[in-house]
Amino acid sequence: MMTPEMKQTFDREGFLAVEGVFTEDEPIPIRAQIDALIDRPDDPPEGVKITREGDTVADKNDKAALNNNVRGAAFLVRFMPFFQEVARHRPLLECARGLLGPRVKVFRDQALFKPPGGQAKPPHQDQSYFRVVPETDLVTAWIALEDATRKNGCMRYVPQSHTHGVFPIGKDPDRPLHHVPLTGKRNLPDSLAVPVPAGSVIFHHGYTLHHSDENRSDRWRKAIIFHFTTSDAMSEHDSFNEEVSLEID
Ligand SMILES: O=C(O)CCC(=O)C(=O)O
Image (tube, rainbow, N blue to C red):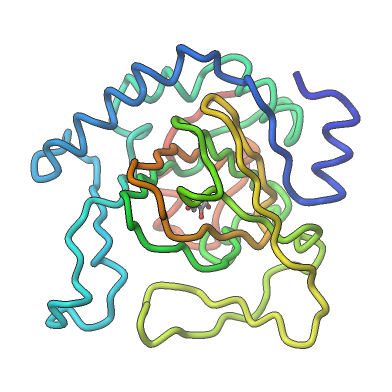
């Protein structure tokens, strides 16, 4: 599944889209699990955390900004056997091992469901948050459960941005949790939209700058996201190490 040419592209560009990692049918039961979470956001399975659009807002009294739409979930793999099976999906693991080496784990997992009108995700680097060591041992797998299109807010990546390491972090007063990468005078190319059909997986390096636009369609854009690392990698932040999603190899 992961040819030497694909690995070279990933190493050069900092991301790689692989179509057909999951068959056409495989996302269907995964979507059903996600839909059940969306339908009952106040009653998630134990340990699973539901996130809402308004979670990113600075002023929790600002009723106009405080959009209560369900936006995502965290710890599906850590707490739900169904998603542990998804994380052990053989072609997915072949790709992850092809990029990271023979021994991998799911360091962290999340799901992002961008509802119609759902807000853009600003540019960021995953390593800015996770601080995994060895620093190059974090690869995120973004798994499309629906077709991801320019209209519904597909992923966008800044080619070769992974060659710069973690940028200094700035603050956005409107989004206090967000790490704004201060790219300074570096002459970075524009980000590239990467539309993919359902069942595709886009892999990106922990340093790669990425973001997504608002969902301008009338349908949800649903994805699950597994942050893979090598088995022995650890975060500089102990809290992450205490909440690893799934040991695999
Ligand atoms: O799904 C999105 O729009 C953003 C996902 C993301 O930031 C990530 O996979 O690290």
